[in-house]
Amino acid sequence: MLHQLHDSVERARRRLGTTALIGVLALAVRGAGAAEGGRELTKAEQRVVRVLRATRSKPPPPVVESKKLVARDAHAAIELLLDMLDQRRVPAIDDLEVQRLSTAQEELALGGLRVIGREGVMRALDVRLASSNGPSVRAAAIEVYGVFGDANDLTTIVGLAGGPQDDTLDARIDEMLQQTLTNVLTSDARAFDRLRAVSKARSRDVISAIVFAVGAARDERGLPFLAEIMTWREDLAVEALSQIRLIGRSSSQDVDTELSHLARGWLDPNAATRCRAAIMALGVLEDARAVPQMLDLLEHDSSGMHDDVFWALRHISGQDLPPSQAAWSNWYELEQSWYEDEMPAHAAALDSDDELEIAAGIQALSQHRLYRHEIAEKLTPALEREQPEFRLLVCAALGDLGSNSAVHALTDVLDDTDERVAEAARAALLKITGRDPRPAEQPH
Image (tube, rainbow, N blue to C red; front, top):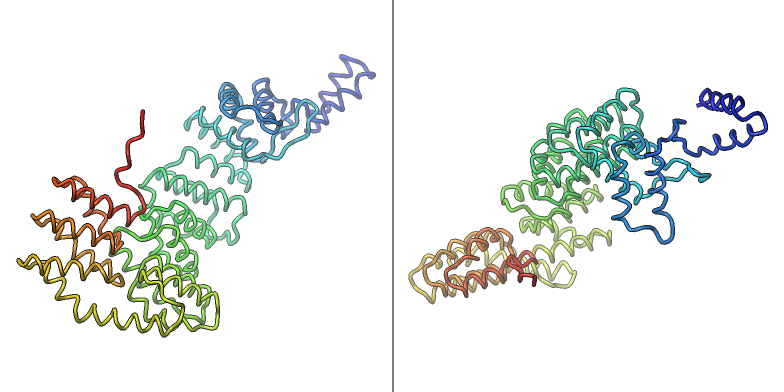
């Protein structure tokens, strides 16, 4: 930068004489028309800079108009756009100081890259990475992959974060890695199947960022990966368990069973942080088999753990009992006794030819929520009964149980030949998922 400044001064001396030298020197130092690295901004780049700076005026110009103006010069300003993402700054211009890149300005810069397209941006990105491998350059590259990346880019994205020798992840790389992986997982479902492969031989911080990205994607397809993490990286169990609360239950009972089995193994109050994460995960998974262990924890000295157990028990049971061990123990004994002694007979009644016996069995099964997922699986075959009255009863019972194990079966009934049954299935799905499977059409 110094030799460029010297050349500029010499040219100015010859052209203008010494009287104008001070003004030229001041202009150069202020950076008017200069990029962050000392390179002179082109006319197109100057226009882009002014558009970005205008976002901080009061009031700012319309976002749509700003996007159009950046898009117009994007191809000619690709180096500037990448520079700003790398340095997190908007260059000085027109006697104005350098600005820290704001969120609105960042979005405009990324929008300009989208206009250029993947091929052109990646070509420029490769050149930058070949000349510099610093944290800021890699963080910016990871962010760019968040715009264009897909499942095929996962190895490259994670590789940019660092290898197993990088014990502590740069804070900005960590942020960009989580953000980019979340974008890729959300846009390309194939990415979930490749998570394990790209996680191997990585540092704890990198794998942790991957785990948090899985949670942020809020997609049940990430749950098997969390189960794997809990199996071969116990030091990341708390992080993995915490994401279950964000994602919720799986539509696969096998996946939930595996996650619940792993979480129950960590209900140890001597490791309080992991124990509390396991409690919350088991509550979300609605694991009835965790109730006996939770009853023991309900009297724990820690008020935080007590509150977590109380929340989990209410979520698992659907009951609103007081937070006392005696009340919950009494309820559990009665529910367990019914499940072992009476439930099999009610389930068998569903195959009966006696209509009253069938109806009584459906009614009895719908009133016990502790093992509602298993009960729902026993009820769903009755949705194929020829008599619409039975199908109506089963839809209502499944809605009362609230088990998402019944979602697929109820979805199939939305097209039932009997409109009453189809509407009952819709009502049940609304109760279970909180979403109307067939929302009313919006007026044109």
